[in-house]
Figure 1 (spheres, helix red, strand yellow):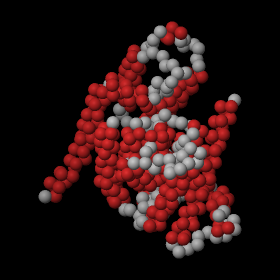
Figure 2 (cartoon, one colour):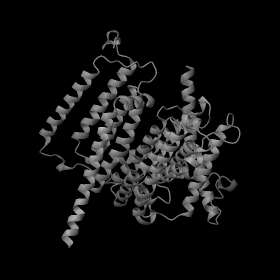
Figure 3 (cartoon, each protein chain N blue to C red):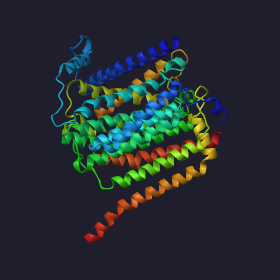
Figure 4 (cartoon, rainbow over the protein chains, first blue to last red):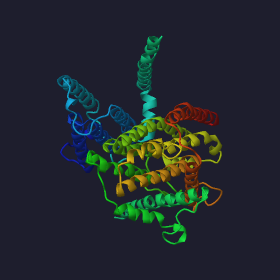
Amino acid sequence: MSLAAAQGFLSPTGVEIAFLLVGIATLGAAVVTVTTKQLVHAALWLVVALGGLAVEYLLLTAEFVAWVQVLIYVGSVVVLLLFGLMLTKAPIGRSPDADSGNRPAALVVALAAAAALVWVVVDAFRTAWIDLDGPAQGSTKVSGTILFRHWVLPFEALSVLLLAALVGAIVLSRKDRTTDREGQR
Amino acid sequence: MNDVLDVAFRLVVVFAVFLVLPLVIGQTEHKVMAHMQGRLGPMYAGGFHGWAQLVADGVKFAQKEDVVPANADRRIFQLAPAVALLPYLLVLVAIPIGPSEGAVGEIVDAGIFFVLAVMGVGVLGSLMAGWASANKFSLLGGLRTAAQLLAYELPMLLAAASVAMAAGTVSLPGIVNAFEWWWLPWQIVGALVFFVAGLAELQRPPFDMPVADSEIIFGAYTEYTGLRFALFLLAEYAGIVVLCGLTTVLFLGGWHGPFGAEGLGWVWTLLKTAVLAFIVIWLRVSYPRLREDQLQKLAWTTLVPLALAQIALTGIVKVVNS
């Protein structure tokens, strides 16, 4: 914490410059993701944005989080997204009906969420500095120790939330079949 | 300056391995398949038993016209082979082949997560190819690829997690260092699950539903010709190298062997990898293709429970042992 005085915002190191540049690229990819009219391109730009985030984690020495980010988001979530887009036969070229009337509402929600997240992060880590030259502070061992020693309760709460989502998905997907069967009877 | 040279040298070596080993496996596949089917296989190119067949194939591919279909999404169509191939190059960097510090391209702290994550990215190439070709067979191939990946990623991860639990580390050299011979019977179920799931992720027979040539021509790669098609094929064989190497490192003890663990350790790694690659080829010749529903059923009702049981077993032994 006392390091804060020794650090200045106007003496950027190589890592800080890289962090900023990657951040700008990530932001750009994210903006293209939500503005492009070509559905599959949006999903692929999302890959770029998520990959950029992983690079940011790497630059912050959080190696474990970075690879999990790639594994879960790029490897699974985007594949699922593309699977869905292919099932709905996303056209090559522009989709004229890709715009929805909910645009302003979505913008408001996005801005509110972004403001909340930025505020929380800034407030939480205001004076914390990462020593990039020392041993990695985000290695698997450190992450595991912190997660299961200090943050077990939120972790378990999250897994219960995911379980609830899973059960909800099963209920939703099974509902149609039973009503079909009743209809046949 | 020495560090830069060292890194550059390692990258060059990894790149050379990346170019040579897949070709060796491809040539072996030609010959092994041929002899298993009572044929001779390539006999002319290069003179001695057709050793240069794949070099000749490469020259042929390079001479072919590079066609992009008129209705295709040009840029994504052209980018797809690179997305399919490059992840395997990245994975190869992290696989250790010998016990010394210098026998790995780059030590990655969260090695297992790195290799599995990057291998998963390679499938995006097939999906991009399937969608961008503007061909219904390609689209079907892409769909099957995605469904297959989603089904087999989970058992693969669980099996790898079991080894990580056993070794108490997620770094690949760390896992091989912790290996003892009795891990082999202890982790055998996990090894089988990992290998089978890996085969499915590579879309090798008997899991080649996404490229089933008698139904959907060549799946996502139907519209590709020339070099780009060759890149997809190279990606498949590079995938075999990576999968066999990973199975060796995670489950078969890598450089450990009855003798020569220090100086000749890397020979063991290569030998085990080669045997596994031979099994991959053998399976292709022996088994018929699984139907799509059989594929899904195998993953969700057999492999996932087996992987979970393996994790439970690993946990129990670990707790009892400590």
